[in-house]
Length: 131
Ligand code: AMP
Picture 1 (cartoon, rainbow, N blue to C red):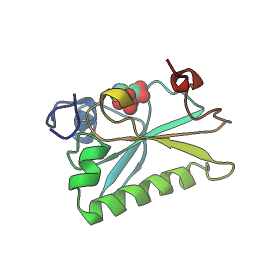
Picture 2 (picture 1 turned 90 degrees about the vertical axis):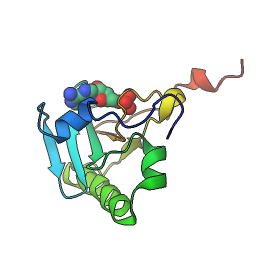
Picture 3 (picture 1 turned 120 degrees about the horizontal axis):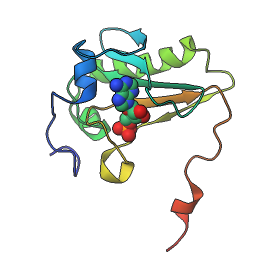
C-alpha cells in the first residue's frame, strides 16, 4: 500500500476519469507527462491542479515508483504551467496533500498551484500549537 489510508490505485477516481476524457475539465496545459486544469473549487485567484498521466496514488507513490523521465517531465510541466499562467512574479505556492494527515481527497497524485494574490502563512498556525 503506497500511503496509509489510500490503498491501491483506483482507476475510477475523478482525475483518472478526467485523464480518460470521461468528464470535462478546464484545461490549462497538457503534454506527454502531465495534465493541468483549473480546480473546480478555487481557493486562490489562480488555483490549478497538475497531475501526472501515469497511475500514481500519491506523491509518495510517484516519487518512489515513477520513472526518471516521468518525474522530470512532470515537475518541468509544473514549472511551465506556473510560468505560462504568469505566476513566477510575484510568486506562487505548490502543495501536494499526501495521505490521511495530508488531507488528500483524490487518490491520484496531484500538485496544487496557487497564485494571483498574497497567500498568507504556509499553514494554519493553530495546527502548530502544542496540545
Ligand atoms: P486534495 O484534497 O489535495 O485531494 O484536492 C483535491 C482537489 O480536487 C480539490 O481542491 C477539489 O476542489 C478538486 N477537484 C475535485 N473534483 C474536481 C474536478 N472535477 N475538476 C477540478 N477539480 C476538482
